[in-house]
Image 1 (cartoon, rainbow, N blue to C red):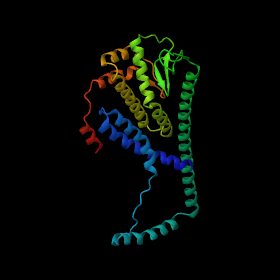
Image 2 (tube, rainbow, N blue to C red):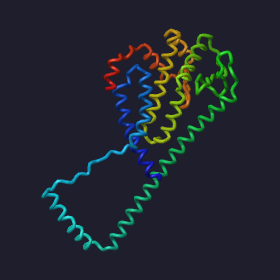
Image 3 (cartoon, helix red, strand yellow):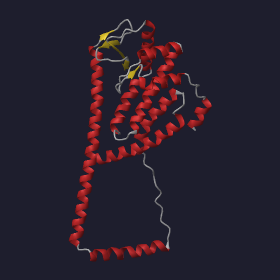
Length: 288
């Protein structure tokens, strides 16, 4: 059972590589972030479904050929001469040794693969349990919202599912606090956590493929752009940029959360806010 699953994972991995390259070429600079979200989710669904499709091959008769007839006539004679030349015991020993080597190699590869799956799933479950702990044992900030909590373990504003997590010493001005709240609410309303959970399980299945980690980064960056668009409908670009800089942190984020402001993508986000929107014509051409 393990071997077919591993072969299926290899096929899925190959499909992911091909589709992600096409995505980068056609849509990496596209500003239609809603469409890009659907495409990125498709990069998770299609690698899981396409390898399951069975293609029917027409097994027609092979046309007659003098060359093929000569090869077919020579092969049996060659096989018999080899059998007469090599002692039967040596053939048996060589075959058994080759089979044992292939069996041992296959078992080692499968063991490494399932170990990677187990480690990846364990990390995902640890992060989920940590977030649920924070949600259950943090103190509420009712002045900022119903599911806004703060805890000493939280180092930066971030969100997961319906909760917004704030640092214990969160003391920004009213305008910055309002912008942070609107940003995290955008993640929650648009259901970005569902994407991340689905992606985490997909990453556990294809942990050995580096493209899956690039896909994860693309998904999270696109989520931030979607949240940025929502906030800019309420606040000006100048106000929003100042809030991003005020809350900017050097700490790293957990895979299962969305962080309001991180240095590694802050300049890129502000640059994209000022970019000209991709036209519907250009998007349609890329889809075709």
